[in-house]
Length: 153
Image (cartoon, rainbow, N blue to C red; front, side, top):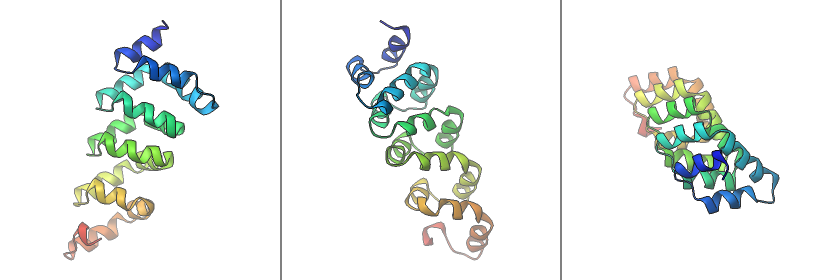
């Protein structure tokens, strides 16, 4: 058995699911399998951040570009540290890998929004306004200073 496949199995991946992914007809899924093998150490970091092998396989099956973005483990770890959950990140990554990229890009502003009292759920519910929110934190601070709360939107 290939050393990298064994490493993934040791992390909790199902051999059958890995082989199914490897044998997938589409080039994207085949690429995702290759990416998982070459990034086994980063996959291990994601597992350490409480992502499950099943979640990562789901991302590969639905949105392979999302796996590549999640594998930017330092940035993904920052999102987890900012109180986003693996479940939230998997859900949005399966839908649109650009969203996880945007979250990575705006991490410092997201932390400020969270410090102002916004919740991760509110941020994700307003994901289409993320760039506006992050670019206008000073305005959000002014509104909060006048007594408006993040839940008032």
